[in-house]
Structure formats: C-alpha cells, structure tokens
Image 1 (cartoon, rainbow, N blue to C red):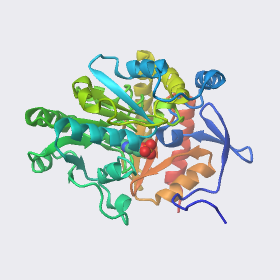
Image 2: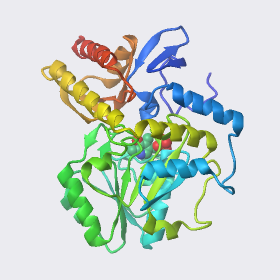
Image 3: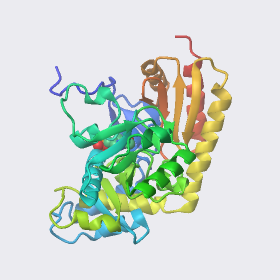
Length: 379
Ligand SMILES: *Cc1c(COP(=O)(O)O)cnc(C)c1O
C-alpha cells in the first residue's frame, strides 16, 4: 500500500544518485538522461551548482521578503539584461503564470485572456483555466472565467476572439506538454502586431522553452519580439524550486506594495543556484553549442528514422525535440529505459527529448542508437 495519492503513474524504478548527465538507480544501473527531469535539470548535476548550493546552505537558506535580498536583484538583472523589465520571484511555473494573469488583469483593468488549444500552463485554478486541454480540467468544476481558446498558428481564430475586454494573449512558443508543436514565426509576428494594434498584452510562457533550452536564454529572442510578460520556472534553478514572472517596467505600478506575494519566492537556495545557472548560460559560445547540438541531433534522427513507417514526424528547436509516432509511447519509453535511456512522452503520440544542455556528442550518438533500436523493434 502507498501513502501517496495516485495522481502520478510512476515507473517501478528509483533514481538515488546522479553523475553529470547520468542517473543511477537503487541497483546501481546507469541511465543516460534525455529528459532533464522534465526540462528542469538543464545543466545536469553540474559541479558549479552543487558548490554554490553547499556554500549558501552554510551561510543562510531563507530570509523573508521583508528584507533586502541581493541575490534576487542579481538573478533578476541577469534574467532581463535590460532596464525595461522587472521580475517577481515565486516557486513554480503555475505560480509564475498566476502572477502573469493577475498582473495583466490589474494593469489593463480588463479580464479576458486569449489562450490556445492544446496549451499547458499549470495546475492551479488560474493556470488550469488558461490551459487548452479538457483532460486537465476534468472534474474540477468551474474554472476562472474569461479565458478563451484560439487555434495555434491561426491568426484569424485569434482575431475572432478579441473583444473590448481582452487584457492579454498568452502562449507557449513551442507547446511542450501536448507534443512539441512549434509556433510559426509569421504567426508570432502577426500576433505581436495584433497585440500592439489593440493594446493587448502579450504573455509568453517560457517555462519549458526558456533557460537555454532552444539555444537562446528565452525562445522569444529568436522570434524578434519583446513580450510584455514572460514566465519562467523549470530549469531556472536547475531543480531547486524556483519560478519568475518578468514584466515590462511600465506595468510595474499594477504590482505595487501589498498586491501580490509569496513566502518562499526568491528563496536564497533557489536564487544562488539560479545565479550560477544564468552565469553559465550567459555565454554566447555555450548557447551556440546548444543550437549546434540540437541541429546535429535533429538531423541525425531524421536520417535514421525518416523512412521508418512507425515515425510520423520529427521536429523541434534546440534541444527540445519531438518524435511523433504510431507506436504506443508508454511502451517506447519503457523500451528506451530498459536500454539505459530516459525519454519523456508528450501528448498522445510523441516521444519528447529534453536532454541536459551539457550533453556531449558521444551521448547524443548513444541516444540515437537506442532510439533507432526501439523504433525498429517488432512490438
Ligand atoms: C511545466 C509547465 C508549467 C507548469 O509548471 P509547474 O512548475 O509544474 O507549475 C507551465 N507551463 C509550461 C509551458 C510548462 O511546461
């Protein structure tokens, strides 16, 4: 009997140790990690992060947000690198999106938010209400009102939902949970213009796409836009719970004294690891390597699997890659694990690869060989 709610389907395996990009189970078996948690331990179990955390624990691990926190200032500065934005820290992706929704409503004095079908923004009531998947909302009664859902990559469907009460449009640039669906750049340009023309805030959820995942600190940088609000979490402190809502400074009066808050938000442990994570990522060469490794992985996968009748499509950006398949994804994930490779499912029929950004070319080749085996196996 388990004392836990059974809200997760857990594999019968426990990781008890990590070494760089490898995970080790109770029996000493080693696995190559192509999941990074779920896009969380983006730098693997990096020695510089371990050092930073250990040093901070020995000093102090929590102070309330009633006192100056220099680490928060430092992390905020490296997140925005631009005096036009400010940052609010929380502990998770859902919380970052809650803050974004609250800020957008309060700043505009409007309530409606346009989101997208198949999106994922989190499990709290606001974030769940912004999520365009009925299975996420099933059984939980009324959500937060005034959310509507457009078709991804379809500007006309967005236009048809705009009203005088539209506060914001909110989206992921690559829908992660629902199967690695990429926003087209023409669509994003049109959306950006639509927001400007109609005084609507643009909220980009970078919780999975951010922190180097697609080859730039945030994916929006590759679309040539300046969102009004950006949310981050997952890889931000490489696995120490941490979220952030980044908003344009002109919105800041709506988040004034007493308007919002979090006891743990901007915690010293999270901040010290976030600071180190961002200093590693704040390096053009490291980011370019991510793009390059992503291109190599995608090209090699296509070469190996494009003729495979079980594979429908292979797509992605940077080190965020999906393989759409006709096979049973649970079976595929299990087969990969049996061969020492950890991969993730996404949506109904996609194998999702989110390797650590520190992955080596040898590790990429090893993963490709295992993926080749599992897609060619007779089931
Ligand atoms: C994971 C995720 C969230 C939710 O983050 P939590 O930390 O689990 O609350 C929100 N949006 C996107 C795009 C995500 O991938």
